[in-house]
Length: 84
Image 1 (cartoon, rainbow, N blue to C red):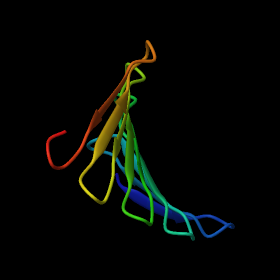
Image 2 (cartoon, rainbow, N blue to C red; image 1 turned 45 degrees about the horizontal axis):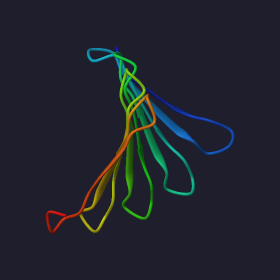
Image 3 (tube, one colour; image 1 turned 180 degrees about the horizontal axis):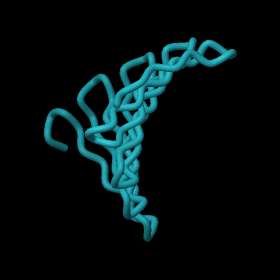
């Protein structure tokens, strides 16, 4: 089943058995979610989200609505909220 564990360094770890997902919250507010398909999401206290997909593509979602993707071949794609 699901479980919650509080680590000595004050990290709080939840494990959701049905989805095989681990959600770790750090004392500084950083949250890291690890999915069973090897996707990882980092949610930073400033509102930025960093998603690493199974193919190692990394996508950043910024609080201002801008996005940036970095593909495994090094290609960088940026999208601004206003469509640029």
